[in-house]
Length: 600
Image 1 (cartoon, helix red, strand yellow):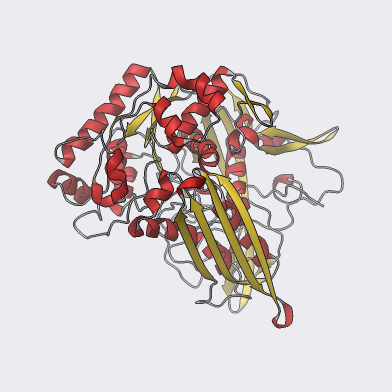
Image 2: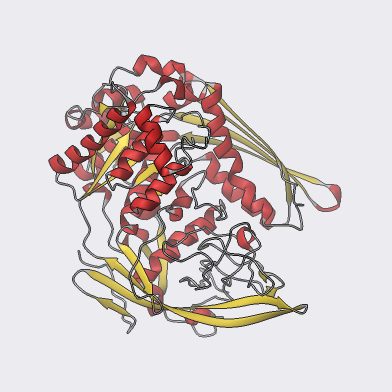
């Protein structure tokens, strides 16, 4: 695959199979000794290796016949075929608007005419959505053409063009355990697996192997886009370890369908992504993924109202306004709304939508005390008439100067499945890319991959899955910075970026770096250990760390002591991105770059 650009640097080499980039990560250790805060610069040399051969990717969707499954399949077909169709406002053409990788850009550097921007997809060799092959399961037996008509998402002239292609696609029988989803879903359940639980898991594994062989794909990623389930209890002896979870499946004990799919995928060596809010990844499933070195990610697509909330609260608190009340009201009429009308399923969604502001609040001890946080109410109602066009109304009330208040009210109409579908594509493509990235250090020359819990996906998920003990970050632009800068290292385009005359410089001469990166070492957050600066540090070092830095990567829990370096943890912002293979207690810094997208 031809590269859209080449990096001219002695630290970047291209071969037929790999791009290798050497990167010196400069950081500081901050510690307190006898009441004095001391700053000690240090650096570590890393080598990133990215496979250049893009595989043929297959994506298997659990809930393929639902609104999201039919819409994303139809969108890829329409783009592949170059379709256009008439609407009352004129002719429309197929596109991938809403996709971070396909429709947004990154500043590559500065050229003779100013800043140069490239699409995310051009930073490294990636799968193109048009080349993805779909398959999957559904409890409904409708072929995808009939399911597309039932969903009522796409314009009819487009459906007519897609019909002969999609009527050939039929979901495989799926796992159906009635007590995990709303009772009103039973009328759809005419395409379900029978027999013992272990036998059903084995059938899912056979389905994955059959799809891979019959379609000729090189890799398979499995993604849950089916109904929201109720939460599972974490029970010692049942699902707390990998062995206990596998035994529970053999004995037919309580294991949710989404977890059964996760186990089947992991055992087949296929990455698994959870697009719904339930706790699919019980401790036993996470341990199994780590043992098998398989990527997992989730939870719950972040598409509309929650994405806006993660931006707005970050803005309000960042502006020094004390947000005290957040009330979110939703009504929708698709099958997701129908399923969420049941109390237990709604509770799963309520949790994922409510936690999205926690890290932003914790980041400002000036405004919020240890137990202080905004009142947060989430309401979801089922209104069949509005279909897939979800309505979201939000009210944000903040305390301002001298006892005043400020209230912002927003109405948001979200075409639910059209917003979720590009996220599904980004999740699959980004996960596959991470499978081709490895790194090593001078101290440990053996190449290794990222941690099994793929926290780089946080930008795309309401309730980001992170390894135990790692901080969860929801602020949207910090999450985006994580993806942007992680993708920079393997190809190191920033190494070729010239520094404009007069621009403030910092790490490695990158424009706009006005401070120091976050130190690694001990951390005041529970379980935190080492961090990576993937944003723009704009504040001087203070006691306890670099205030205002974007701390986005932790490597695992370490014992804390008087001499440990410290950072601000989740209060610094950013997206946690642990690296597999860094031992607990390690003070080895991790790769990073400080970069300001709009240096003064």
